[in-house]
Image (cartoon, rainbow, N blue to C red):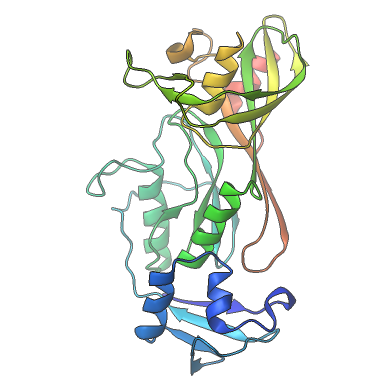
Length: 289
């Protein structure tokens, strides 16, 4: 697939090599683009020391194919341009299979969408969501955009906001949970607070209280597996429907967690982005009760 990048004022004066490095693309990949003659500047074969100016166009011929088996299912697209695809992940579906020969995941549905459009993009998810979690998830259509999104996640420039329904009423309506998360030796699927675990930071704010649960907004500063579920359960407020962390609720058919918003500066256009998806029907239904 040929992808074009229009140079903005922010990148004017950089060499072509420095422009690629600004995406935090790895050195081996940058070397491959130049040595394989895959990169052009204003339709002329690009050289590492070429200077880019505002409104120049960089063209990269990514020689690749769709790398997941396509599933012919509907994709709920929240935002799309030449570089980013943001979709609403439904519940009860994995983001990707453990083997690319398998199907029935969100990546397989995205693969079908690409194939139907006649595109040969690899399917690149920028982050993951648990099987039960719904809401905003980002895919990058090219390796430059993915590298930049990865870097923005690690530096917290890409802000992910979640909404969840948690058991009980909180003593502290707004707080930060800072507790490392590690493996649970007694349960293969569970995670737990552990001194030897990886650093994990969760910011939360109670938006509204109900009879026996609360609507809570959560912002992640790190992205550990089950982080919101583990952290809120550790302070006595497991999520509704979360049997794994101590709050099975027959009225909740899944873990009541929703990826509500992704806020970031676009890796290519530098426009401020805010992609939002309102909470799904099953969460609304519990709130109405």
